[in-house]
Image (cartoon, rainbow, N blue to C red; front, side):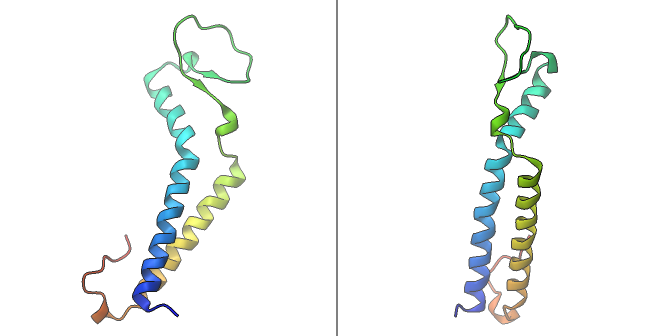
Length: 105
């Protein structure tokens, strides 16, 4: 059985991996939002949707890469579960063993 410090570090690592999964999941959406801030929405092309021809170079987006609502909900729920595990693991570490450790954000 891992020590309280190891359990905390393991929980932090699991949450960090999940944070990376979240970033990967939302990357296509962030790219679209960024393009919408730079370009007029009328100059954005969504692949697979019949659109008029736009003569100038314009960003293209593939909606198949976008997460669906259920995936977003499940991923956010998992993040909150992992965050709670991190916080609970922190509380299991005696204060005298917390020296040099960073508390949960």
